[in-house]
Image (cartoon, rainbow, N blue to C red; front, top):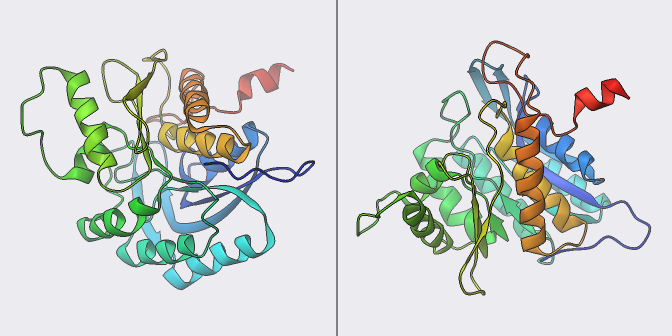
Length: 281
């Protein structure tokens, strides 16, 4: 699942996502996460948002032909080790990104974070775009990284049999999302009482549980972006999927724990770069 850079080369990853003017999520979070892993980040911006820690005030999708042009420009000049897909904003942008991904070599792993709702609660993908996301993007995903609400939205239904507990529902959701077409799913645990990620692969039996501590006093804005980007970065570094998923769980959890709660009046951004330690150095 990995596409390793040649010896001596700095690995490169591409993020295809929206811009967060508050610097906490989206492209900004992705590039910081890549850098924290020693991977050079490139980008194709799908939307410009006017947002801060309190709310998303406006979303301006980038013209789909320009999104595709960004992807092509990067792919023509860089040897990509992995691609991360985040916020896609509109049906037309989803279709443009699908076209761009199909032009890339199949060996390049594609990590898809199905961004639908911001941490502040703002809806970031309408129903029409979500339908195209499922039909066009999910089958291209090497690994899909939904949280619990996103997984529920993707399948658009409830378990046939009422689950006995939250863990049983999470496992059912992981399998149901995998059936939509990605080669693997990491269902993240941030929205569950037990903060465990669940990894399931199409060509491997069983579910791998990736445990980690919960940080209730941390700051979580950008945690999903950070998780998926660290996962993509470790695939670009040549690691296997399970190792990359474990690294992503550890890094995203630590970034939440170090979260910058003092910034802004709402949900503060995660801190994947450990800025406090850098100030002390």
